[in-house]
Image (cartoon, rainbow, N blue to C red):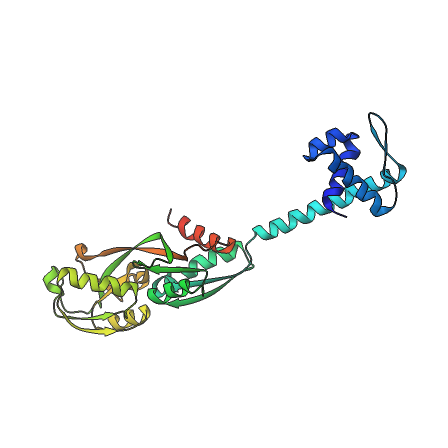
Length: 291
């Protein structure tokens, strides 16, 4: 028994007229007749009696109508339940995130989403920007969250939050920074090649002609902060990653405001990919958080 035929029977039982039933169901009159005949054949009985003007239900038709209403109601309830289940986020979302975003921004976003959608699960891969974009390209993650600029043709990049990069040092660092010249001949603790933060560090040094004494490369923001805290050099870091250190006096910003860099945090998707509900929810949470 097809639900379309059942619906046609219910409408016909109410309207008691083939023409009005065909109009309400957006069907032709012959199709309405076929639907009713199929049901009668299925149950090997007659459900209607026709006169020149009206349709009357047989006793079997009356009984079938009573049960048809219950079946139709249950069918609609099931449809609504499945629709709501589909609309409610559940299951796994694979996120690739750069170190800065993955360690300092994403946990709060995930907590917010799971408070609303308890059945939503996350699998997070953290790496530098270059690695995360490559994971997006290879469809290893549903969405990538990165800093820095990307120019590959097969991914789409959209900004969701502005970030500020600042130069920091240990509070015990001896030099009193006032001008650009005071930044020459210092040790720097920097990220590895492929990092969005490293991209901005290279730009800062080259565009301002800063002479670097030496560099210590560490592929972890936390490692860089600990190194700078222990006096191993200067660092260019996201302001979002050093709030606690600044508040407790473990790091201080170098007060040369003109050198501070602004950049965007962005989400990255494979070009042409279809967004599922989980990914769209994550994007909405990221973008709404900026308002």
